[in-house]
Amino acid sequence: MFRELWQRFRPDTVSRRTARDRLQDILDQDRTPLYPELIDALKPELVEVFSRYFEVERGQLAVEVERHNGTATLIVNLPFRRCKATVAGGRERELPSPPQPHIDPSQFCCPNPQCPNAGKKGPHNHIIRSGFYGKGKRIPLLKCQVCGKRFSVRRNTVLFKLKVKEETFYQALAFLVKGKKIATTAQMVGCDPKTIRRWVKRALHHKDEVSHFLQQYLECEPEQLLRFWTQKER
Image 1 (spheres, one colour):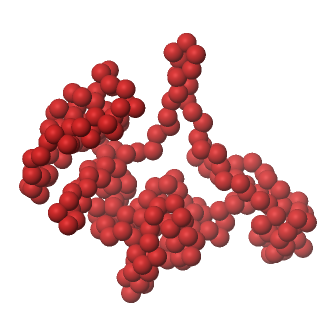
Image 2: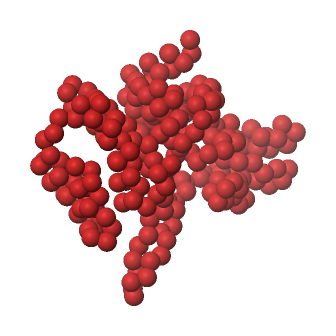
């Protein structure tokens, strides 16, 4: 089945727009029972298929199968990549990164306890935008006009001084909230299990912030989050 997938999906023979329809057609035709042993045996071929089709290194992929009530769900972890768009003349250009969320300086205050402007929020708090920092210069900086101190918009949040992309951090937490083991989660996001444990400890200090994000963007249910926090606080 999966060798056929590669033949049907290789980039020089099929437009990616038709990928979903062709995959559904193949799955409709293939009625072979997928026993756990067979699924495990097919994992190397699955990794090879997705590696070639999505043009990523095999080491960056993780393939898992979730079984529930007699059905099997295939989960493939792909690294985040920028997409390309074709422009006039057949050339390709790289699409820009997603826009940064709107930052309202009036919602922040100077963190310098010695500053007379410390703790003041609102339209007259004298806080302005002051560039970016971090890998790729993606994280906004703010500046107090009174004392001149610059500080990150992530200060006092779960993401402050985080060394990985926030997508990876939140995706790992979502896997854990939905019942994945730490070892499995580490493999799926490409991190060491010790790193995942550190992220959990970090998240425990910002439960409301993390819960809000996971519910809004990663489809985590309140019951799942409550169970997860209760288990980790023991």
